[in-house]
Image (cartoon, rainbow, N blue to C red; front, top):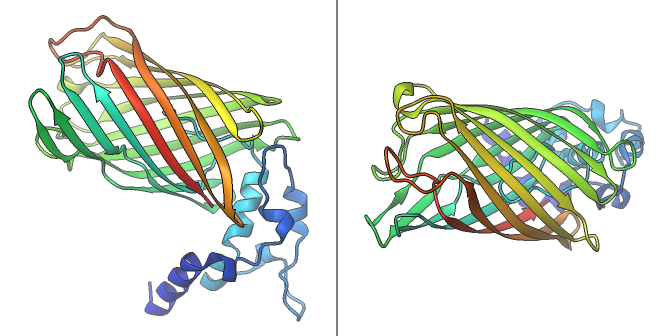
Length: 321
């Protein structure tokens, strides 16, 4: 990338309001809105005749029309908010910071700062790319330790099917993540993991159901860690437009491996997300809080600790844009 192109990128992201040129009708993405046709009909607001904004080419045009493209992508899918734990099957553009306060069955407690969240972007009308920061963890009470955990450095999502709130209110997507073993010795698995996933959801008025499923596959030492199947089921409701109470079931089934092979774990998460509260134009803030606890199995320490914790307090701060 040339210095000129880099300067264009920085200027667009630093001052999006000055370059986005998004009509007021296209940036209000409240639940229930569907304006895909309107977005496609909007010409670029220049004095001279120009092609439709979707047909423009070049780096500068790409970033000038960034928020138009995001608005179009979001108008063609449900207007839900991302759940507290389960990955969203729809496209999301926001900054996200999560924190877990975990209490383990062996009397240790772990604080997880970041939880592999970060910048979530919609570079195209059917795609999402996440740029995450590695989590920082602090263990207390038993075997104290601090340091970074393994880093989920890559996420690419492709939306396959979708319809806006007034056109069917459903979504189906596939995505893949990769996790690198960069963590401190007390927090790393020492191997890379690859996680292909598929997820979808259907809305019924203010109520929606979301589900995701995918394997977690180690690239080496599979005899130790094994392959696990990770599933999530979310029941979510919208109350007074900005209150989203939810119940989640987070299930992991280890198919093999000496640590957990043949075991399964089911966690239940209850909580709510408040927002989005608009700050300026497209920019807003949302806050989620939740409590997670195991339903099964019974506590054990050998051959490895299971369930992974006895209770977990969750805080999630998002800044959608």
